[in-house]
Length: 150
Image 1 (cartoon, rainbow, N blue to C red):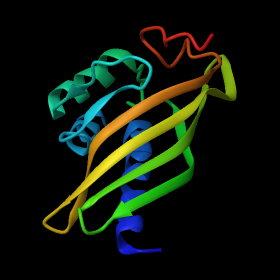
Image 2 (cartoon, rainbow, N blue to C red; image 1 turned 180 degrees about the horizontal axis):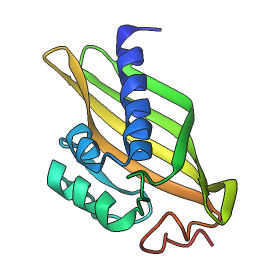
Image 3 (tube, rainbow, N blue to C red; image 1 turned 90 degrees about the horizontal axis):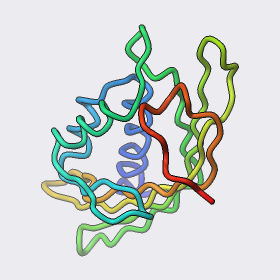
Image 4 (cartoon, rainbow, N blue to C red; image 1 turned 180 degrees about the vertical axis):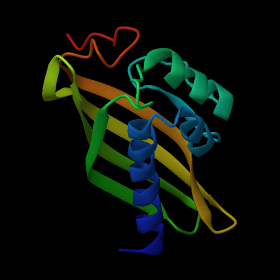
């Protein structure tokens, strides 16, 4: 695996780590240079503050400061254009959650479509699109309803 592939994989997995820690400030920093939004609904947001505010207003955090989730990201397909300093990654996600009154279970699954750019030897997100394919009981995760998958 090339260094570019490794760095991009780490960025994708860092996102999962930050959201599961409830570190929405960190998510804002990670995605500060990216357009972020649902693949089904145009109108992405951008900027660290906007990303942080989106997660803060939509994702429930519990007493420990976390959403009590584990985002499992798999099936990464990374394509790098080293000469241009750009890359894309498509991946799957499954979100598991366990809270009082809700045993451990998958609550949502879908796909990420990401774009990256390399600047000064470091890769960063320039776009993250979410595609929600399957929805379970997100009542203890989301503060607002998810879009319907019907």
